[in-house]
Length: 352
Image 1: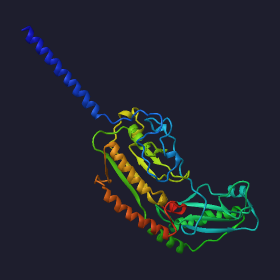
Image 2 (image 1 turned 90 degrees about the vertical axis):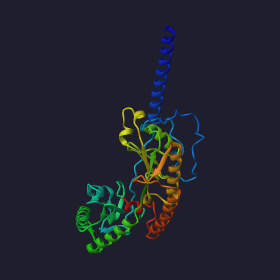
Image 3 (image 1 turned 180 degrees about the vertical axis):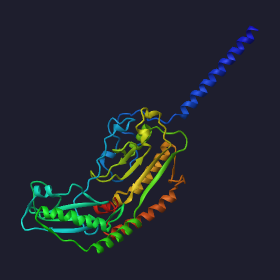
Image 4 (image 1 turned 60 degrees about the vertical axis):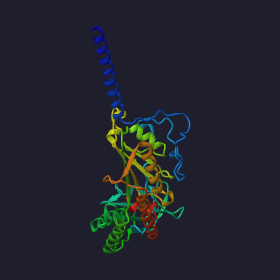
């Protein structure tokens, strides 16, 4: 009996050990994938796409960790001066004497929008003969006010045009000038035509990468994306491939659940999908953003065991990417013929 009891005890111990081992193995498999410890020096697996992007995006930032705060935020895009009759209603303001920048600044409206449209005032510098945003210490021989004809919210309407006239006249009166305005009905019609063109040629593309097996932790996603040139954006759960020029929109955006990025224990947060997106009109064609988007999606799918799909979960194959690329080439050509090349200041303003 003693030998039987000993054998049963040993068998029970083996079974218990097997159960514990299986539980630990299952637990490890169900945990989100974690970021690997960073080694010194460049990562040999980092891909070089030979596409133009900023030096800041070429390698992961020094000291990058699992946290979004471990990366340097990218500057938000800034609007540049440059009213243009192609997409703006422009009202010239004339006066007899030169006006100082201080006087112009004091007379400027407190808001830079009229309804849903950007509103701008520019002065003709007496020193350079160039139009610029009014600044202290400068002198101006003329001014012009402008309201954008259309943006992604829609076309300028009669109410917005009327408010533009009122606001411009207030500025002109304050500096002792007189404003001239084009015909309202003609400008509203022009706004509608431009809005129709923009609506027919707007393109915002996205690929969804879905986990095939284990989920991903935010740190794992950040590490994999950083190897391909992404850095953290200013919004939690958002990473970007920065533009070559500071202040311009990013070339690509990678986004995931912001709550997971802000979790108290991000290594335990589980992500089962991330989204790669491209705002086509905002990025210059010569940056080859769609080509890079496809290569990044394929690289991440391979390294993270993910599947590339559309918003509805339908698989996106290489031949589908080629078809999209052909359509994009036609879009780029159409924008160029309209004097609105993708990535230009005017195109970015119209598609905003």
